[in-house]
Image 1: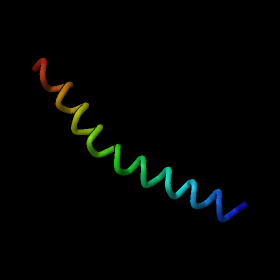
Image 2 (image 1 turned 60 degrees about the horizontal axis):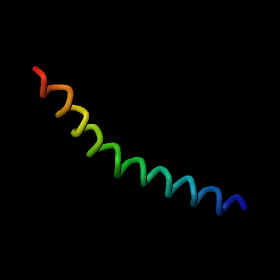
Image 3 (image 1 turned 30 degrees about the vertical axis):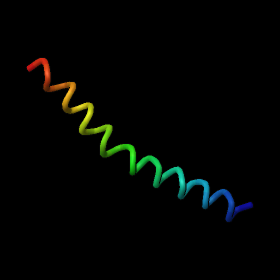
Length: 35
């Protein structure tokens, strides 16, 4: 069970890392558009 939990957490971390970069750029674009 520990291995499954760790792999799931690893997958979640990878997923978040993959999404956070494009999301950050997207948020920055939206924030700076009105300016």
